[in-house]
Length: 381
Image (cartoon, rainbow, N blue to C red):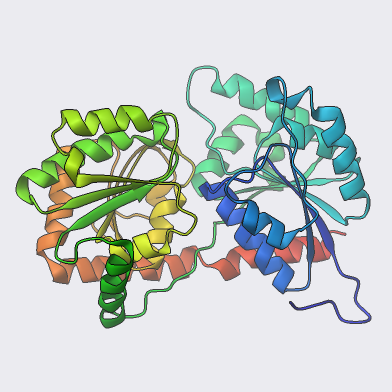
């Protein structure tokens, strides 16, 4: 790890995470922490909840991190202990960085008396109470926040419509994603190797997705699209990586649709890389998302994306027919048609794959995201 020069003070950042799961927000945060450490920063992590599946990465960054039980609504029963811990962590830190909108993390950060960098990866409008709730949120945190970052123009514009008085503090810092794809020869070789490693069929069209199995992630649409694809391509196989409260309902739906033997539930996966390499298409569906990270991760490995997003910032990456296919309604007939178009037209598939990779390099590079945070922590001490 790179260390600070002898005449240069090592900058310590206290990073307050709402959890240690493997969701898109958390994985983006872990990657930034690791890259900042490689640049000579020290990152000290505090989390308001018990351990999640991202613990190994968190402990590799900060071996002294500790969990809290998050008891009571918004964690109020465990808050005194958590707040004391945060105070200790922040006392020896130069800057406080809150990732997410966890009430306990924000309250504890405010009580340190230090200015806060807040990264909000969540969309704002879900129902008729959303504006009122978010207005109260920005009124309560605005005076202590030094800067706010958002992963898309979509989310920043939402926030700006709610709290225009914070405009000067609001910044779009796009999540950065690594690009591993180099050429078709290597991609195909990696695909065969990944399929062999995972025990997947070599000669079938493989379609997958990963994430929390919760209602708004619409894995039911994934299954209904899979049914339509399966009618035209009986040898196609489908993979769902992740877990959550909807898993039993989804297994039942797969049986009702007559495709249970073609759908593989993989559970939580620590490293999605071999799946992105093995799959031909990522089929991503969501009702609400600031920016679904899975399509961008997949594209970085050369995996094509077909998606539906009724409300969110994903169109800032997926241009319909350009860098993938995206629909603002969950039209599984159209999505199935797009998947089959890619399956039967390798020239089109290659063009879309290459444009997606170019988009990642241009607008969603790790270097661009890291540059903002590095400059922020170095210049705002």
